[in-house]
Length: 461
Image 1 (tube, rainbow, N blue to C red):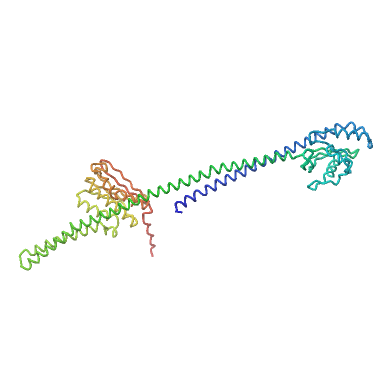
Image 2: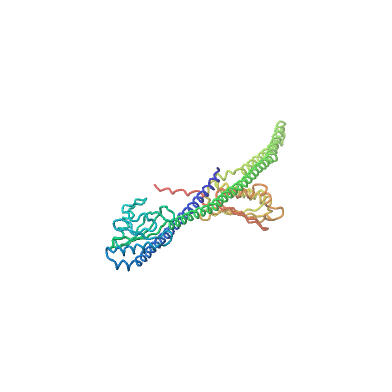
């Protein structure tokens, strides 16, 4: 995986993790909220069952109150009548009243007749709870609720049951009734199942939306990256080809300069020396003049070599700095072309050598284009520093890029403006071009990083 792809992946992975984390947190919060709601619902249902049991018990006690209060401790007739009343108080398929004495003997059980007359004090449910003993204990305490497991008459299966037991202390009887809780638990179980299903559905929907969205973003980023890379590769190939073409053009120019200038001058020197040699051999009077002409031709060849060397790399730029190099460049330009050049350098330059070379090459390229294409009669160059940032402007009074002949065409075919921009862009600077029918102005702005740090002051010894 390329570095760009790794960067994109590092940007996408935290997004995916964040989405999954948020989804998980929302799911957890939703689960807690739903669980709390279900628990509240279950408590309310149990509270309603407790209220129902109290009402049923009060109803039964009201039905036997007259008989019980008017009977004595050993009034068997009253006991039989109370037994008959409680046996008849049957409600629903699983609702009934039961009676045990405080010793655990069953007196009334409408749904399980086999229990009558037997002692069930030590009866325990599947959970090990002493059902009858605990119910009798609640009755002796004045009445209370007790939950246990008991066989459900309608289905014959063991189920959770909540009963309320009250005491008839005069007869040492425990009267109770209960309701089965399996319907309550069934409702809460169904609610929990619905909750889990809804949460899974929500999580699935979020995943189906978020994951494809992230994948689309990732794929789009990859596509854009590849597309930009192809464009960058194409631009790089084009730039490389322009560099090669420019190198070939420069080599061709140097070859023409050497052939048309230096080579012709050296040929002239050779002919002059040959002529001087013949005249000297024949002791002619004009031998000295022939030698003088050869010396002049040799001086011309030397000047041409110096001019080419100066164009390739001016020595004054390395020895004296940017400002003297620009002045030398403009003097030679004005002398060669007849175009007036004014240069203004307000402050001494403190630039890195690479930055000085970049500004010099920009000025050199600009003057070349002024000479070849602008038709200008005057050029102004200004070099100054603004808050530690070096600035240079080159302005001419030519016809501009929009003039006849298209002053920008040569630059578009070679490196031209792109070369200037890239030289300034290498240092993080800015290159601006403003052109009209009345002239062109180029502005190069370098950042502070292109300058050299100030030399530390030496303390006096």
